[in-house]
Length: 296
Image 1 (tube, helix red, strand yellow):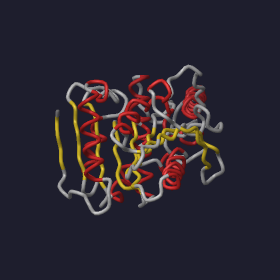
Image 2 (tube, rainbow, N blue to C red):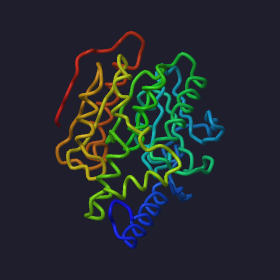
Image 3 (tube, rainbow, N blue to C red):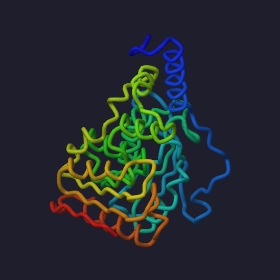
């Protein structure tokens, strides 16, 4: 028996944990019907680059003539590069180079399991390195949504050449976000299912902890965006990340906004605010050290 459970309960719990692990890592097939930069009249280049563990990732390179800033966009757990085309196009029109790409196991990139940030951070580091090669001398920043926001934080903590981070609706800990997700979906306590699920994962869940790495981003700039009605990643995660981060940092909390809703509530205000943050911070020698928190 497990933890004093009868044998039948132990078997069912183990089976549930195995199924949860398989659902978490299952690759996501994306459809062929999606917008590209062509629909928006933006010239682009289909590109590929290779990760440190040998996978080929596919993306779109949007080059802005004379750009001194390059932004790499990072999607959510099951997202594809077209999900970030709105903000990517807007930042390109602001005079920035933009790289949009598919994480491993998504879109046109090499097949792989999903790991909710563990291997995807490797992908983000490869994307940042590729962006530096494509635009030598340009300052490179990361812009991530949901899981992509968590990945952006971890990648910047590990690569000091990444100049700034914008994280919209990130989580602070994979273990905690899965615990909340499981409890919300099943109305059952996460223990002992979550520890068992971790045993079935082919990676270390405890290694996906943006809260443990965020302080290493400073003195580079971090902007956090989160709606207080987010039912996927807890808004308190961004509060915790903001408290743990060094300077410069900025927090934009949006009353009434759900998961990654801020862009859609007011596209113009969103783009202007994010672009101003990047223009202020993503350049050598120019960075405010005053933390800014705004509720709007």
